[in-house]
Image (cartoon, rainbow, N blue to C red; front, side):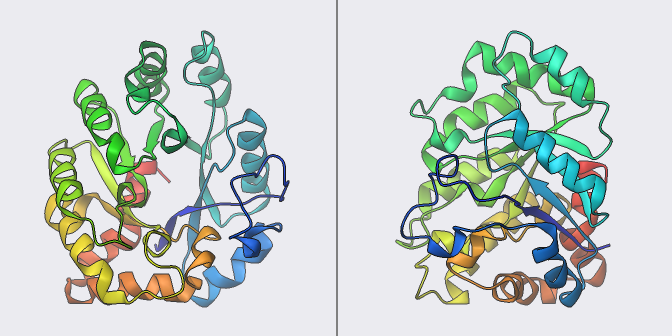
Length: 275
């Protein structure tokens, strides 16, 4: 089974989706399963995991409704307020939805680089395991110290780093990011998504070879058993077509055994999210 472990759906709302600025006109429209399905079929991808793009429970409900109607959506990573006093009640409610696999918070947008270590937020993280939910870590490299500290505190929880933690590929910054990735990977409960790379490069002028040093770090740090492919569609369209971003990964892993390619392109996502 080939799985796209990271993509988004939305009905575009200029107020809610204010992060889509004037430099992103191609994203200012609806993106729904009917738009993604032809790409999955064409590229022989069996299913996907829909990831939240808006921080609201309405978003979680929206993605779950899409998942009920579209069998290609194998799982959903939603949002709830993990810092809320009633978080356990909310987790109990959402645990009834079989396709809901985990949660994410857009930590990269938080002004406090140590947001993830707030006691109320950690209380929410602590409760995820009780309901068998995963957690997607969305950060910038500057937020790595707090993220590493967090996963050290929860060695039995399932975490996955989104988008390689967004290294500054455009400016070829790699040294401190590499050290952070190596440290993070020491935690065997942490996975990494090879996704979102083209949008961290020069959108209009990137070369596939630019991503090789970053992919080398991920594969050396995490190994083939804890890496999963994700497109970050439709956000990837800012810099690449679905086929272009997919080819970067396919070309990179072509020297791996068929078994290890299968892990990266599907099995690891299936195991991590219990698809």
